[in-house]
Length: 414
View (cartoon, rainbow, N blue to C red):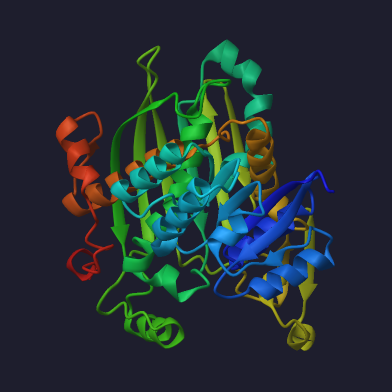
């Protein structure tokens, strides 16, 4: 009998395929099964083709849980609570799960994220919040290499992070009610988390720095224009002339070091209108006398496809996630799953669950990212700095759903 750690997927879409690809680089784990409304058979075939495990297609979440050591919740945002509820019911019914993984964002609202934390805690199951960018080797190596400079000069004081591409794949991502917002909810959670991590003094817990305030702006710059709104409506069925979400967000989160009182800044910028080579992650961090920078569009591999040969390229994304061109000079990343941190986040979760502990990033961590994202929406709506140290503000955020997530984005964006 195999001694491999048995991982199951709930969901078989885009992110599940990325995670399955990451598993090709990890020993001691098998993709034991999948439950999904669509794509389960294709994922199972992929797993068998690459020797990732049997990946049995199960007929229910409960049945999947009964045959796995841990499950990864890789379903759309609007069904997370229901799916986790089914997982918890399976645990209470006897499924011996060591852990539950949840893809970002943990919740569409603060209340939703906290309910997920409560469900897992009450069931006694360890958790992993999947924020892949914190696990990027480029980020981790930069921080480790600069550790001596930090000790000599002091920790970083400014971090900047952006994630940009031309827009999501699936229609539900564009729907502000089902997704929970627009690009800020979808990608701002990445950028805020990376900045928080980069600014954290070396060796400290990821939640060491205390969020103090958030100031943000949201805007609809491309996909609200009549031409592009029609294109989006025809392609996804989502009408941005009536229920828009933001396609651009930027802001600053201020953090406080509880030991020294020093305040540091994390700046984030995200957009769904970056029509260049494809997905770009741009990050940097600065401290006294030292700095680092990461740009995922700088690749050791470039290919060129001329006009005469362009018709032979069926899928532009063979070059890069969210690529919008299949000709010209293309940046190609040989192993995107590893570059973006999927391999390391998965390895961390499996090792943590084996040891009976939460992953580096627990669901409690994920709930704090949700809090900062929702504070950014509140800041953009009110046009002010949101003070996270104010108990009244925190209470407001507990019951807050942004106008955009309510389907009322026209009141603030148009």
